[in-house]
Length: 465
Ligand SMILES: Cc1cc2nc3c(=O)[nH]c(=O)nc-3n(C[C@H](O)[C@H](O)[C@H](O)COP(=O)(O)OP(=O)(O)OC[C@H]3O[C@@H](n4cnc5c(N)ncnc54)[C@H](O)[C@@H]3O)c2cc1C
Image 1 (spheres, rainbow, N blue to C red):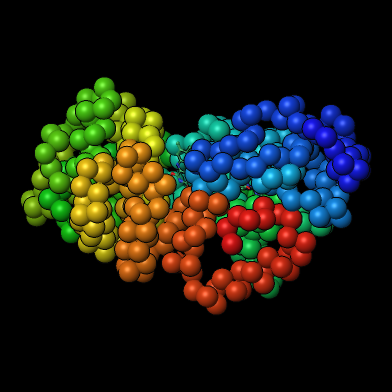
Image 2: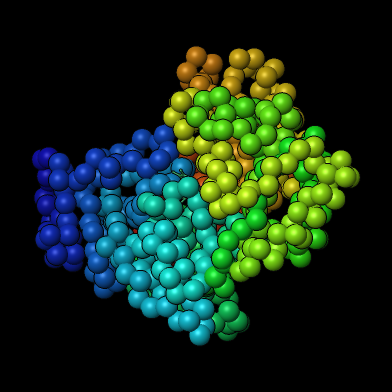
């Protein structure tokens, strides 16, 4: 790379801030750092920095701020919205070196971690200490807590424990100009003015670099009761969820829906054994985790029996072991294989008010079938959290950019007063559609916040807004 004096001067300053060994440029930057799990293509980064402590992040940010150089924070790069892909000439800042579990405070039920800790490691450390860290998603082995916080990740158990936002007690953030903002609160209650950590949770790397966090732990679970049930329609699914929450005192930990298109595809395209016949309109995976699953079992079975008698449930398979529970989850997690088989696809992560999910899915299906009669569609999702996923494709012949399909789907989401992103964030991919879910006044406030917290506009510029 031919460097002009400015670049050379900047890189010298960056190395002085980060240390020579923590700065890589040109061909030294690994190819993996250029992408995340989205289809978004980024630009060529100027450098990749890998700091290991907060003071170094602060020095790096101060240097980039002074030189007006863009910075893209990276976690595990499992994001699906293109938030972590490099912009042209940026500095990539990887937080992977912040992989320390600093403390588990068993009396307070909290864990202090570096933002680079892999989610699965946090889950395992919590379990070893007799606790439960409930955030769980398919990318658990690669995504980092900092990335989970920056995207306000959701996943499989939001219905019971909330999103990442609900699991964060405190945060340490380095601001765009290098200022270290320590908000390492350890109390569930702290109303000493506005709780500013929430500005950074879900900000997708645009307002600050998250370096450490205090996480809220929940009491340990010993196992689960789970069932896969067949349902006649969405109205039955909504009433089953309400019934289950009532009978089980709000302890349902997952309520995942799979429409027939998804269920049939996952069975025919993977080697999985069908727990139920594939000719029902809708399937729900329902799970109740607890400290004493054996004691919960009769209540769980009675709940399903009464739903069966009421005609809400047409057929059911109840897991007889942990292995069977895992087999049910394999059906739901089979989406990873379907995605690669059907590539290229357009993947939607939307939410609409729970009561309207059935009507919304019907309308999307009808509109897409009318416009693209041969388009493959898979509907499924964390329906207990109002979250629907749609995988549409392969799109190669029908709508190579996916724009026509997106226009239809996001238009319907807007009509249903839903959100264009339930959990994956906006990143680069959903930027054109953000105004479908946020009013002009909300967007103006967001721009004002960005200008205040990042006046030089260096942090993940060009993403989200
Ligand atoms: C198989 C699979 C299943 C998935 N399932 C789910 C799911 O169920 N629910 C869900 O919500 N998501 C899901 N995801 C998406 C993804 O795993 C989450 O968005 C995750 O939280 C991203 O974490 P990450 O560390 O990989 O972040 P990255 O992809 O590296 O970054 C994501 C965004 O956060 C920013 N960022 C990362 N680290 C920091 C930091 N330390 N400080 C400031 N900004 C930062 C980046 O700039 C970027 O904008 C899934 C992804 C895959 C591949």
